Length: 69
Image (cartoon, rainbow, N blue to C red):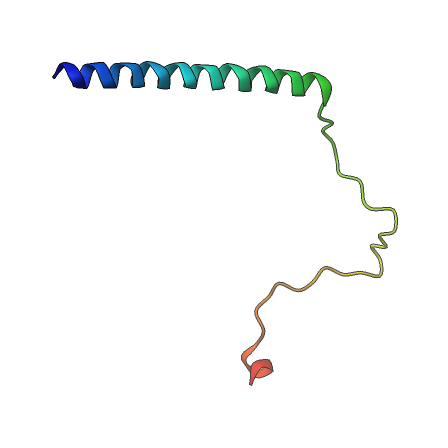
């Protein structure tokens, strides 16, 4: 029984320390990313060469049975 405690206790402590370390590193990187790369929210801009009058969106409806046969 003592062997189980000797083997499992360091593994449990290592796992907890690894989890806390990854959490803290991820939180620090996330905060740094927000400071350096600010997100801009708003309406998306259309591409400069897009002509909305001539192009229609593709049809997403099912084809009729008469068209298939």
